[in-house]
Image 1 (cartoon, rainbow, N blue to C red):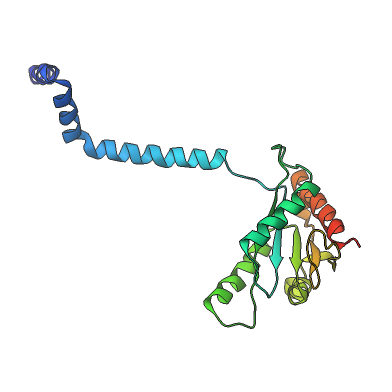
Image 2 (image 1 turned 45 degrees about the vertical axis):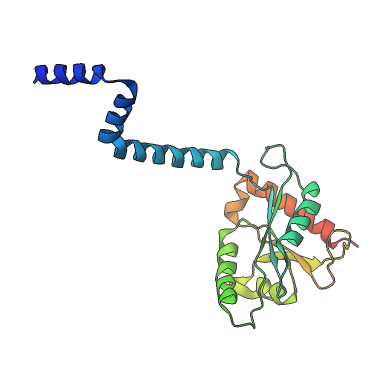
Length: 198
């Protein structure tokens, strides 16, 4: 057995560099492909983790009219200077999730969004809501109510609030025990006051 191994080693070392590569590829191509795939998945995961943006305030935008991603992006930029950097990443970031849909409309989109809304509410990440009267009524009554404070948006410099309201999410007992969550509620209160001031 040892003689066979020694002979194989000598035969392999006698090969040229290209022949060695061809030999390795022939016998180990599956292992190499799987290894490269695993390495790329791990690298992508690390890159995603390092470059993720964690918002200092997460909000939901709930209206029966549709808004563009550009509008949501502009609104995020306008509101970001008013929040504190609660996650200490050196950035002030507001993230707004658009869950706007017309509940009276029958479509697959409406069905999808009507399922997304309760999931977003139960997730508890959004501390502030911008909504129209239809969704304000929903937030006040659904599941015993989701909001503690609400007011008509009056600050036209930031948002044309002709028929929009700002509402602050209920603080749960679990949130009260988490300093970061309470800091996010502090940001929600700041933005709420800015939006509703005359």
